[in-house]
Amino acid sequence: MKVHQLMNRSVEACRPGDSLDAAARVMWERDCGCVPVVAEAGSARVVGMLTDRDICMAAWTQGRPLRDMTVGSAMSHGVTACRPMDSIREALSILRAAQVHRLPVVDADGNLMGLLSLADVAREAEREHASRKADVTDGDVAAAVEAISRPRAAGAMVQAA
Image (cartoon, rainbow, N blue to C red; front, side, top):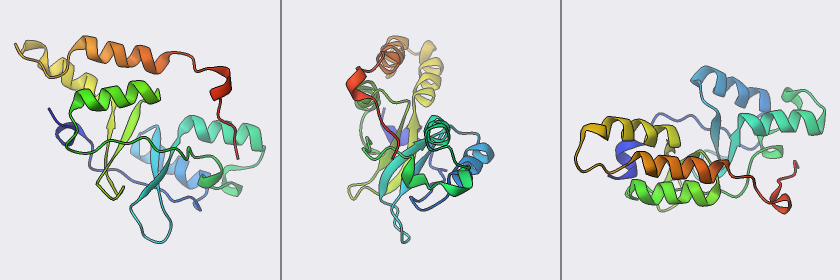
């Protein structure tokens, strides 16, 4: 099974110059916990990811209203992504190694095509329970959850901008 078969194609992105309250509104309206960040000036090139936790930590560390802070001040800059033709096993490996719950799906130029979440993979594993040859097993999902949930090293903590 390939990433493009499970990814969510209906993804709203934000830009580094957007306010954090605008990004939080997108998360509320779309019922999601993260938003890909694309480059300024109409580009679809992914330059970061912003999670609900990033917004909370920025509010706490910067001590200002969300409307006065930008997405660029809180987003993760190191983008870990996958490609539409990657296998689900490859995507799970990336999720585990990066200890993240969601991956932007990008084309060869880094342009946003969709989003793949661990929840998407878990739902597929559930659907495949009756299948003799499952592409995604419960064990695959469990291993990813365990790796993602493992505490990071103290030196790997991210600091707000």
